[in-house]
Length: 427
View: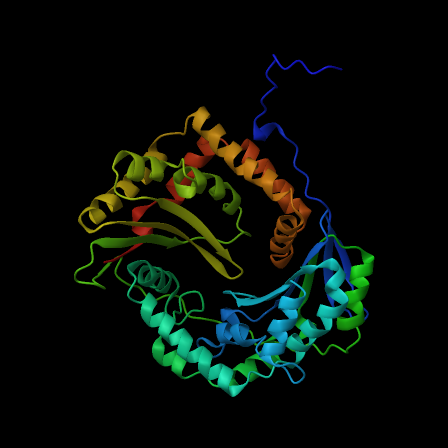
């Protein structure tokens, strides 16, 4: 059949496509360590994530979780920090460790063929990190210096303050870095946290890229041969945030010409039935460049270069936050317009054309996510760590495609009450 180039190809909306999450393989190593692996690559590359219950939620002492992750690869009994970095450079690999609110993640990016060489070194880092005293001191000095620089930035301070208001300063999600807390971190603190929370018996492993059972075998040869002794982590409870004033205005720089605005409220996590419908409403309100907030406050009023609303779901809670920076003289006007846009969504139904645009935006983004092995692996990671299966993915697609303007209006009335929001402005 000859292609007629005078005839334009058919244009299809993203809502018309079928969406299927490629399946993931589940495997237990010889010692029971769970591995989830995905063969979805065409290039000879692999990503492996080791996930540990070692985020801020689990730390007994402030700043320890992030310091432990930062220093994890800075020396073992067998390898010095320099040897680790030189080996990674030689093989063109990357090893990262980071601690979030709930989990800590150790991630290896490598050519698949180098796994037999690199996995033993990663095993040493995960099971035998030593946290040399001089490395801890260097980290403390650098972290404190970085904090002091950041505290001069109004957006950094605003991010700290809104989380503290929503969750409370004693809550892991609301706790923020302080100089005196960082100064009080010692090598023994990191070793204690590392030994209890980086236990492989409590870990889950995710692997994606150009991988097969052979690569799972490499993983088993290194990580599947030691006995696992599961440790019971303490069940931690944190007090609810104390009642505080709804509006906070902070002068961080008397001569500052810009104000950082954060407007936020608590919001349920992914397990709540309103979460996925709210993804649609939040996108329309402030979740992408064509949103209501962007059209009004950037395009029409010219108060800002960008304004966004985001949902932040954690394992033990969540929040919704509107984020922007404006000129100092228009801060209050910008805040007024945010609430005006909330009121419009509470009073008027979204028209069909705008709703279709938002649905296509969300589903079009999903098409991109399902095109590469690492993004597919990330989507499976989110599902599994939250206790979901592929059914949840399919339910989300169904909601994105079929949610109505009437349902969005009811959702707006439920969650866009200004009395439920805290405001922070830092100049």
